[in-house]
Amino acid sequence: MKAVPLKAFPRVQTRRSGARKVRAAGHVPAVIYGRHIQPKPLQVPRKDLENLLHHTVAENVLVDLNVEGDEKPRRLALLQEIQRHPLSGAVLHVDFHEVAEDEKVTVYVPVETVGEAVGVKTGGGILEHVLFRVRVRALPRDLPEQIVVDVTNLQAGQSIHIGELPVPPGVEVLGEKTAPVITVAVPRGEAEEAAAPAAEAGAPAEAGQVKMIKEKKEEAPATEAKEKGEAKKKEK
Image: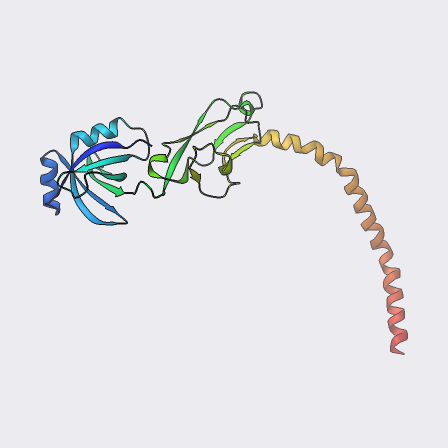
């Protein structure tokens, strides 16, 4: 994942009234935090931030944050959370999570499909997206923006599981490896029709089993009488 450069400034006004003043001045209140730093209040030019968000479709955004006057010239960070106004959609606040270039991080990544499954095209199946996002672990710059799966050869009744997802080197997909992510489901009516011949084929054997049980039940009284006779002899 390529890091996008972004300029930020220290923020002195941290109360609610101060946040309003920051927004009125054309900035967005922000905060950066991480394992190795105390949370620091920042402010980011609204125009720069909106331009960044407008040109990215990724769920995770990696930024090279240049904080004016900071002891570090640049801070590598993930755009962790965006708060928006419920009506206007304007950005009210953003959180940055500082990460180290040599330490792996865990994030959710969307799963997208390409192609038309043969099981849908000719087999009458239905493509089902079981998991739209999966958790992955990798170094920050190795994180994929999305995982793209080609479903062209997927037959009806087949699935693509977590352990089969195509990911770049250095990226680990977390979770149960046998859990389905994408599947071509067989319509219920067709599945029942396919099961019907098998059920009919098994009918004669089941009838024979019932007959044998019935014959055993008819012999039961004689067996019980014999057991009772032996019990009486023992009592004497």
